[in-house]
Image (cartoon, rainbow, N blue to C red; front, side, top):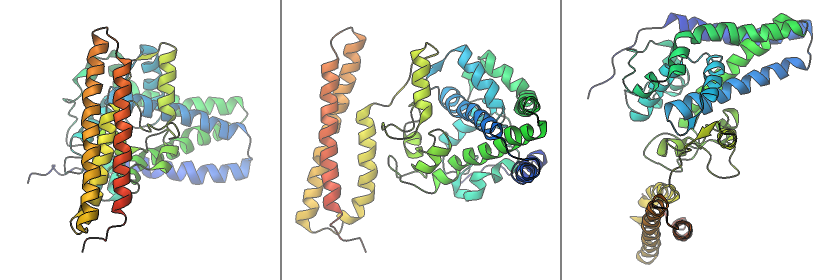
Length: 368
C-alpha cells in the first residue's frame, strides 16, 4: 500500500505554536494580575474571537471549502479579513488541505488523520511541512479575486490586524499591552485549540450518528466551542450541507448567521442534504451497530427486528422518490409542496419503524 511521503519539520510553526500559548495564557494571567483587570479586556477578547471564529467556520469552511452556499463579495471580504486573524493560513491553503482531508479521511493521505494519534490530529501535523503546496483541488478558488488577494496578504493582515488592532484598542482604553495580550495572543491561542478540537476530539469522542465507517463523531462540546462545527458525523456524511447541527436545538450559530445573510441579500443558494437521505444515513449507522446482535438473536425476535428495518427501508426509498419528484415538479413550475409533504411523512414513518427495531434490539444478547 502506498503511503504519503515523509514531512520535514516546520520550525517556524513549531516556534510560533509553542510560544503563543506561553505568551497568551501565562503572559496574560501574569500581566493582568500585576496591572489589573477591566471589563473591556474580555469584551475585546470575545469580539475578536467571534469575528475570527465565524470567519473560519462560515467562511473558510462552509463557504469556500465546501461551497455549501454562495456569499456576496462583501461577506467574502469580511471572512477573508477576519479569517486571517486566526493565523490558520490563507483560504486557498486551508481549503485545499480540508478537501484533501475529506477525500482521504482516516488514510495516510489525510493530512490530519486521527489514525496517527490524537495529538497528531490536534496539532503535531502543523509542525511538519506539507509535501507540496498543491492547489489542484481548488480550481474554483483560483478564479476568486478576494481569495487570491487574501492568499497573498494573509500574513500581513494577521500581524497588522490580528495583533495591531487589539493593541490600538488597548491603547485607546489606557493599556496597549493588555489589548495585545487579551485581544491578540490569548484570543489566538483559545481559537487555535478549539479549532483543533474539530480534528482531534470530534474524531475521538461522540456518536457516529450518520456514518459508522469513518472516525468523525457528533460532539456537542466541540460544537459549543467552535460555533457549531462539532456535529462532525453529520458533516462528514453530508459535507455539502450549509448546516452542521440540523436539529433546531443543536448549537450551530453559523447556520443561523448564514440564514441571516440570506435574509439581507448577502448569501444565496444554501445547499441542504435531502431529509430522506439524512434519515437513511441515520438508519444505516444504527443497523451497523445492531447487526452483530441479530446474528445471535432468537429467531422470533430477530425476525421482528429485521421486518421493521425492512419496512423502514421501504419508506425511505419511497421518500427519496417523492423528494426527487418534488424537485422536478418545482423546476417545471408545477405544484410540488404536497409531494414534498408526502415525502416527509414517509420519513417519519421510517423513523418510527427503525427506532422500534432499535428498542427491540436492546433486548438481544451481545454477540460472543
